[in-house]
Image 1 (cartoon, rainbow, N blue to C red):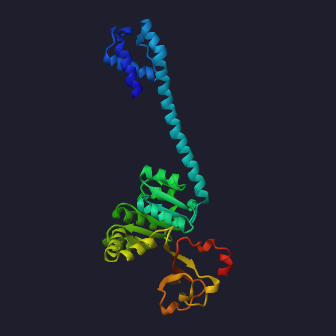
Image 2 (image 1 turned 180 degrees about the vertical axis):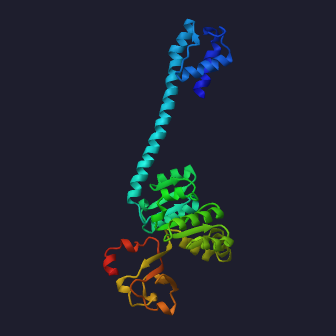
Image 3 (image 1 turned 135 degrees about the horizontal axis):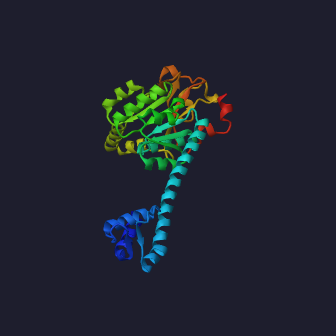
Length: 322
């Protein structure tokens, strides 16, 4: 539009130097017409520069404008085609190797925090896939070196592109609870085995999400309100709770398998502060008599220093488990 405007102004200013074969004169409409057909290199020849000045202007000003227009047109087209081609190749290559991955629906504040927590607990970036309808969020996910798909996750086509059917975990952090319900229903239909975690705003929607197939539902407004209340009643307690929810410093809550040397011992004898014991898929409090003695295959929910080396990265961890 900028090039076209400049071209029209050039012709209007020097319209006496041009001749129209229809009526012999050039007005504003003729100038717009001439600029359009000239920039697009159509050139019907019905309006032509006849004076030396007009011809020089066409040679040294209009011609560069025409070339600039073609560069913009062709360059933009090639860029779109190249980006689309790269996306198709990247998606194809990604699908060949992707299985048991984690799909994060929504890359806003909650989605980013969820991804950061996954990374802090040993999940690889290449095993995380982001779905978001906002182009900016997709760009941010790409900058964070993760596969990302632009689109509405309530659309099954988008979910299939992200290989939800073979995903291990799906985290839903949409902005609206009704969208979260639709996404959960779609995901559960495509993948009956995936573990689905959903964030909702209203507590009243939790039963609906569970009926839709969610394995775990987190009420964001309820959690924030509770943390605010704790901070008001006891600032120290609020600080500790915030510390537990923040990775990278202070204390953190983590899950790890029982080590071989810990089998047969009580939860209280474990170096880490044991909060709960997971046995046969059921969570028991550390004081429950059913888990008074740790068994092989148990998992521990512990509170530990945030900078402590994750269990999977400890030297000899596999041998200790055996």
